[in-house]
Image: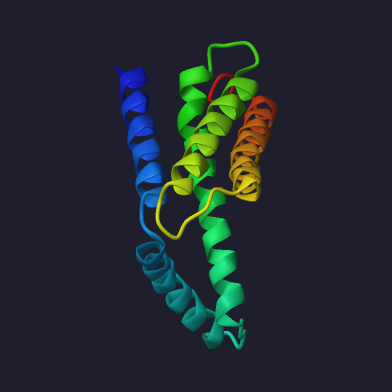
Length: 147
């Protein structure tokens, strides 16, 4: 039952990623623009001013990394019984990232980017590294097989 839940959540998350990639450029920029305004306002309250174009780039690229950080966390339980599970997780994330960027080639105003695949993979690798560290910490504390 647990595996079915993770399969559903993983497929849902992949659909969410692809849905975002299918948005034409104006709609995509509008969504990220909302986050840029919110984050910009928060930063200004702390006396930090970031040029909107630069903040937009940071927000958009961070969104890529976060999407694939979550995706790797969702793939992990599906690969956890396999030897080389982190390689499987990374390969699955790379496949999704490649399809995701290919989708954008066919969307008005969007373009696929190898740099975005690299950012996606950085998010996935950060998730794998986080899982490895968590696993080592749990092992050290005597709580085996928790992750």
